[in-house]
Picture 1 (cartoon, rainbow, N blue to C red):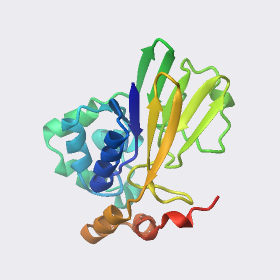
Picture 2: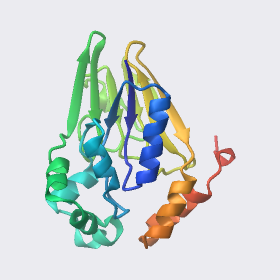
Picture 3: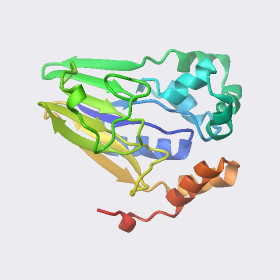
Picture 4: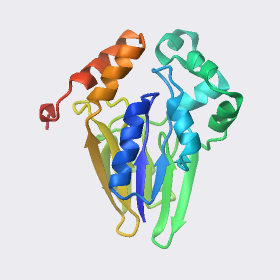
Length: 231
């Protein structure tokens, strides 16, 4: 089995659809989405696509804030959760509310854990490329997939494979391309695939007046060229 894993679309539906196409081209047998279908961009398209796509899903912190309507007032202008919530049908709201905070897959090789944040804090934990993995050495899984930080990496620690798949719709850091992951379930190997989302980001900017920090990031994503990656 080859598993396709992606995360953090944040309403960027065109980038999300491009990510799914890349995973299909990579011959993924099953797809896992690690949360944050919404947030920053007031668009429900990713939720609608997930609902009809036969994709395994875990809940992200933005999905959680949206369905529970717990977004702090001073963050609403940036997150745009109320607008997105208003766009969703009751069935779509129930659908997002049904997403679990983690998923576990057990096979003949071991256990695979899928979370949005970290093994210890599935919704809010941040695990970056340079984060210590010592706290997760006792995790009851030999492979851990995460998102949330928008910074992808593949690392081994304590005989476990830790993968942050980054963001398919709103990347951060030096490489402002979208990212997805292909995991070979038999070989226990993971590959991060980066792809150009400059076009989708330009079109998002043309459709929505966004908070300045969000617009600034999308502008940089829209202008980014692969040869600008810093090692």
